[in-house]
Length: 79
Image 1 (cartoon, rainbow, N blue to C red):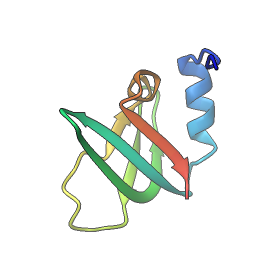
Image 2 (cartoon, rainbow, N blue to C red):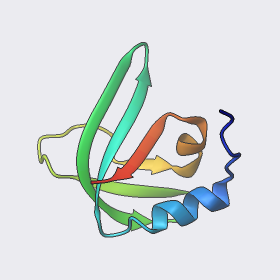
Image 3 (cartoon, helix red, strand yellow):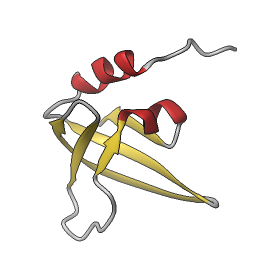
Image 4 (cartoon, rainbow, N blue to C red):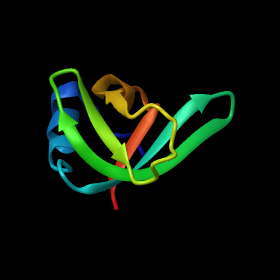
């Protein structure tokens, strides 16, 4: 099945629906490495969004650009 094409505007609208809610983030870091964590979407900016992890010891990147979702490197879904 062919996926419907997405653009940055539709991704921004989709992410804005999760603002202030708990989300699950899946990050593809390349070379068969991935990271999954849960957190709260705390910031929406013109070029990126931020997620505050529930685990205080999480040492990964917590801000992501909308283009990373478009490219498939990051997936965000409601918890």
